[in-house]
Image (cartoon, rainbow, N blue to C red; front, side, top):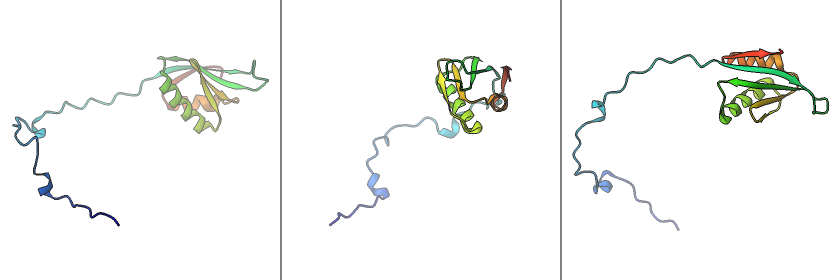
Amino acid sequence: MSKKKKKFTADSFENNPFASLEVDCLAADIETPAIKEVSKPRKGLCRIRLEKKGRAGKKVTVLYGFEPTLELTEMMDLLSQLKKKAGVGGTVREDTLEIQGDTRQRTADILRENNYQVKGEI
């Protein structure tokens, strides 16, 4: 057996604790600051190289030397985007991104789409 639910009406909210406060301005009176022009996304620098040393002969594309330096969350977002678009796996190691396989050209193209300048062995 369920209890009957009360419907909310305007009479239900008669006890308003803020009713006695005086309002000296309305939201329409507040001036909004001028909208700043959208600046171009910052351009960064990224270096790229291919490694296979110490990986049992497997090749790994390494992205390093990000300028300006990226935070961990930015690196994770970039890595996620690279992995999805290139269709490969990868990881973040210290200040570098490691992507499985020799995907230098695809990775460089994706980075250029994200306004990065790519240098290294492509």
